[in-house]
Every structure is written in C-alpha cells, then in structure tokens.
Image (cartoon, rainbow, N blue to C red):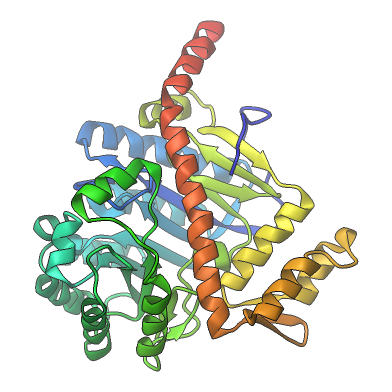
Length: 412
C-alpha cells in the first residue's frame, strides 16, 4: 500500500460502456469509537454542510468525465449523521445515473422512523447497522453503550427496522479483548432466534498504530490466540439460517453480498479519505477535510496519492479479493491476464491447494471451510495495511496544506 503523488491533477479515465460502483465516504461521527481505523472526525455542522456541497460537486464531476455507475455504497464515519444532506446526495446520484442498488451504513441510534422512511424513499436497498456486539460490557468497552444504547435496546431497534429494506445487515466484531465464548454464543443466539437481520458480517478486530493505544486503554490487550476458534464457532453456529456470502459475511439469501470490492472489480470513491481502483491503479483522496472542500470548490480533484499496480500485482489482488468472495473463475481470469501465462501465481495456487484452503472445480477455484479462515486472516492483514496507509495520510495533512499554499500562490 505504498502510494506516491499522482501523475496529474485529474480524474481517472472512464472505460466507455463500463459501469462502475460508486463509493461515497461520509467521515462525520457523533462518537469516535476506539477500535475504528476508518477516516472519521467528530461532527461539526458548518464543516459538514460545506463537505456535502463539495461531495455533490465531485459526484457531478465524475458524471461529466463519462463514468456510469450501477451500484452505490455509502460508508463512513456515520453516513446518516445528517439525514437530510445524505438524502439530497442520494437524490442527486439517482438523477445522474441509472442506479440498481444503494447500500448505506448507519448506527443503532439512527434507526428511527423519520430517518428510515427517508432512506427508503431515496431507494436505499440495503441498510448496514454497526452493532459490534449485544454484550453490554463490550459495548461499554467500546464506548458505544451510552451513545447507541444497551444490547436489549439495539435488538428492539433492529426489530423495528427489519423488513423495511430489501437487506438489513448487522455488523459484528469478534475476538475482542474481553469477549468470551459465552458472550459470542449469546450474540449468535440473538441473531439466530430473532428476526432482526437478513445478513450478518462478523469482522475480526483489526488494530492499527493510530488506535492501538486507545484500544488497549479502553478495551484491553488484543490477542489473536482465540481468533481461529471463535471464527470456527461463528461458521458452525450461524448455519443453516445464514450461509456464507464472503469469508466473513453470512446471508439468509445467498445472492446478497456485503463487500463492494467483491461485487465490483473496479470502483470510484468520492469524498475525503476515499479510495478508487480503476485501470489497475489505486487512488486516494485527501484526508484533510478542509483541503478536500477547498480543492473541489476550486474545480480540482480531491485525489492526492496514487499507486499503479503491475500486471502481476493486479492478478494477486484479483486472487485475494475474488477468493474472499468464496470463488474465483480462473479460466476467465486467465483470459484477462493471458500475457502473464503460462503459470501465473502457480506457487500461490499450489501452496493453498496443498494447505487445503482451495479446491479446483472445473475452471473455478473455491474456498474450503479451512480456507475461509485463512482468507479472513489475509484480508485482515490487507486491511490493516490500508489502515496503516490511512495513518500516514492523516500525518500527511500538514504537507498537503503546504502544497495548497504553493498551488494558490502560483495560481495567483
């Protein structure tokens, strides 16, 4: 995840006729959870209003650049922190593009009728609720008990929201410092015995340098000794009600997919701290919210860093992400990367085959139950690398401000 300055201050180039996923990042939160490594800041309403204006301008810029989007994923932060601004943004997106699916993240305290009806009216198909656990002690460790309610209160709110959207997803975290098998079992029992979720995503806890000290002070010391056993417990107990859609997402309907990077090989990210992956290149927007607002307002792009992958790196990325979604059409991949043949990734394929992680079924590689945990570990490490990059980008904000002064001086 080593990035450098982009070649030019311009948007990625759209492949005409191709339809992408649009990721929209809303970084504002009412409470900053100690375990969260995503780009997020405390809500300040005047700044947030300016941010949403810039965000909509950036979305319009991609339409003018010729991009077409079918699916939209709104993440954060807490996207529903200002419902009216979010709904206005969704209405703009739907006016510019032919959208088939919209997914929005939220927190339990936003599962109120006005917000839910507004989101449904804006054609949101999937609502993903950050629950993390129903255990009150763990919620207190995470600083979420007072902000988002007790486990019982969260259950009641989920019951009220269930059935409003095509998919109601619940995000959970396992392998927390004070989490016991009994606590995990109770969380699973609640999900199995109540109609409160169409989909459940169980993420392993992912520490990063910026959050590790706070996590240790508030949540306790993280250990990976119990991670495998807890994951196996989740995998065994959620079935048959929930079937795996990815290595850590489980759905009542197998067609539901949680991770947009699995569903879409390429995607555009808008907003401060958003990532894009187009044409074999990763792009990162500025993590300085004020800089993002200023640069978009001046008609420039918010992109400040990029990384072009070699063909072999692109193939490795496809291998990792594709199999995280449980299967990879190797024959299709072989045709796309034919210049690397014969035998790309033969060491990786042989290693994971001998390990019992993958099996080949015709032209398709599939994850085994054993391999699902291996992919959880690899995705955890990959995303930890992304989190480390986020830390670097936050430290880079002062440099971005200096570059802005140079730019505006030269322009003036």
